Image (tube, helix red, strand yellow):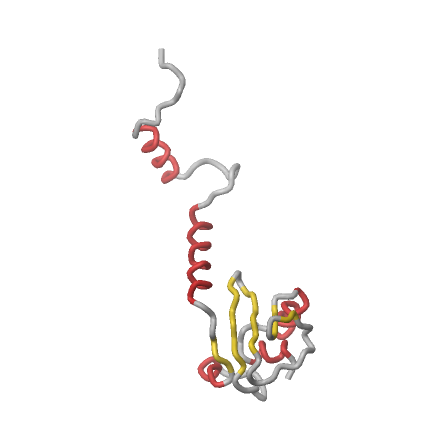
Length: 130
């Protein structure tokens, strides 16, 4: 079975064309080698794929005949992704929530309160008050 079809069948990608694009961009590796979408996949192969800034690692157990339901996906693959990959993704999510690009408008109420608290804690301005 082709790697793009396999990844679509085990529900890592919503459409087969998205799986094909991921292969073409080099986000999919089989046994540490970048592959084309037409590369065949066999049981006991180790697949690494990068999706949503997470490097998933999968071991192929069996090949499905067609796209399978979410409840029975584990029959065809074993997820061996380390937990550190998901923790790193959580950290990225929290850092994006707080970060606001410069020039995106006026400060929010929370930003304003944080600025006021910072000034009250002894971080006085260097300008003398007359």
